[in-house]
View 1 (cartoon, rainbow, N blue to C red):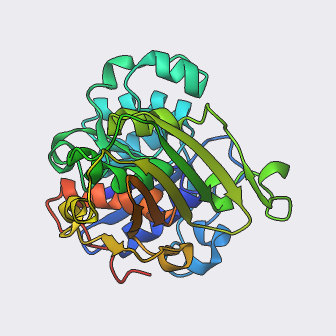
View 2 (spheres, helix red, strand yellow):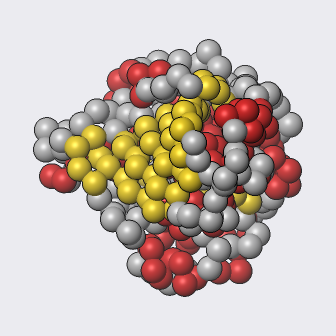
Length: 336
């Protein structure tokens, strides 16, 4: 299958380009940036010299002629663009008959009201929100395989939902809100220059209190109230979430361990039991590491992922693999 990436100059786009270039069943046929981008016509490997020899491809401007090239050359289109840009671009590529994998938040939520509240804009294509399959790979296989538009799950929600959905599915959660404290490396803030996300300016601080857009995404796909607080930390990549859960009375440690067995056969989920996951354990790896410890009806669940891989490009490739009826791990395990 031929793949093009729009927004290839960003961290997630470049990560995805490297995965596609190394994938045995995919061909990277084009990397695009906006016509106004300062990176247009540069080689992707000039921006990311670690990919010299692999990604010596030009970053082409997304011009009118580029759409013609994509029409003729691409099977899959991956959008690593701003949310509003993805909202505008996805219908155009769907009209060409392309399968679209959107790594932004443009199609993850259920209603226009959510976009007004949490993204600050009116969704211009609300009719597509119900058509988009949510790209949480371990939980939505059939929908991902059959849909034309895949809304790849967000980074924080990927870590949280894989940690919590087994408990929800087993009926172990009390009605109380779940508290999620999450910390991400600075690549999660994107590549655009900003004092607030400059490595030397970041220490460890919360942001988006009560209004971060990943809160409603987690609630929507979990079916349970959460209080979600993200933090930005002074390290390059990775996410670690510490999640505080109130269980129903009488839930035992054996019940909890049994609930997590629903993920035991998933090749990119590593269940650690009472061991503590770490960012070091998942950095530059495609896995979700999940650990938990229980005291009475209180459960602390810990979940770690690489925000650029399982939280973005790796999960997008997983969704592509599902669409092609390939193993989830194709092009992921041993690729780093």
